[in-house]
Image (cartoon, rainbow over all chains, first blue to last red; front, side):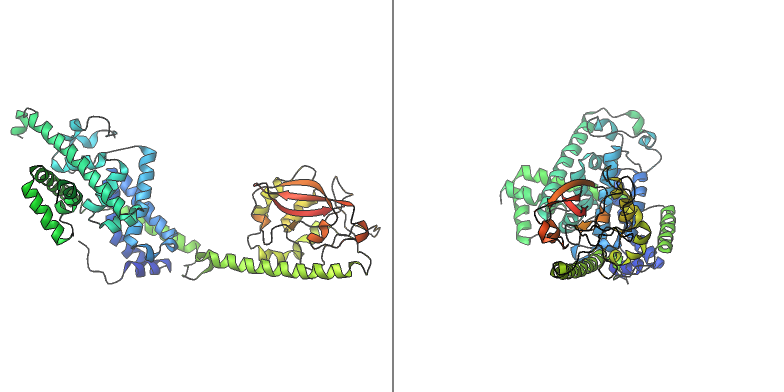
Length: 206
Length: 281
């Protein structure tokens, strides 16, 4: 997934601190995708993901001296900043906007709704499997959602995820186990609901 | 392996994560023997497949180009306002500057203590000199040295401290505080409080303002090295102390009047602790 890197993140950061704009550009282009997608998976909102991405790199510009390579990789450091900003933003907005892949998704134009206590089946049954899983992830409580996003969607190791979240590896493992059990339960319920529902003949001809 | 142990490894198994080979074999053997655990494993594997599809669907998503443009502008602006910091610049190592400040403060205090000891030694052998107050117009140029010990001393930083003064504070205190609350170094016309002064000399500066009859020393920090200018607000309390307190602060005292009391103004911080004191006559 990542291209071969001739200059390490730490070296690019040192050059960036010294005022090298090209180093900043390289560093940004190398890491912005991961930061953006993490914020997107956590929030379900492209707008939030864009804001968070910008904020993360602004923070990096201003507080680069706070990064300590002994405590973890720069990628984990950036994810940690992103996590804090996303959680703060979600807490502030209490917003959940499911994003869609294609224009045929009717949810794209619907206003943001809080998906947790409402009727997730009503929203999710109209989506493909990807949307079902994505929606289930977004419906998780934040501390469960983040470990699923980090470990399953971003394929981080337990240690890396623990560095981002700021907890022990064992905590990450137990939260991930519990989060996945919740997802399975939710998806099974969706699957059972689909099986019990009468097939819409219109969809057969779609 | 039992169902309980199987549950602890099912996530790694379904995600094909790195795990102990023996544990993997045991878990797989158990799933073949236990229908419930087999169903659990199937659900976990389906979930993993779904999550990987979600990840793959977003793999190409990234921040729009305008974000990079905005960040470049911010980077250039930041670079133009601040020279590119090297790793060892003082502001990237705040503890270095604070250490230097502490060292200077310690040196100033040591000099003051030595001079106070010398004053005590001479106090009984020569007439006490008159107390002098700081004229506002004289304060500023003579306060340069103490500022080295408190590099953040600026008028705006001191102003809130001034605002917290009690109503009966002589008006020229504001000028004194603006100039710096740390005592002057002895080489710069030291202020010495002399309780016995019956000075009629016109050379003694008098406190201006409503309490023109009072003469006071500068504020002496009680906690060595304390930077009073960093205080956002403070309160001044008028107290009476035994004259022997003068010795505690390195000031000369007439031993014949040791039993008498002396007025003092004590600066209290927001935490209620005494931060500075000056003696008043």
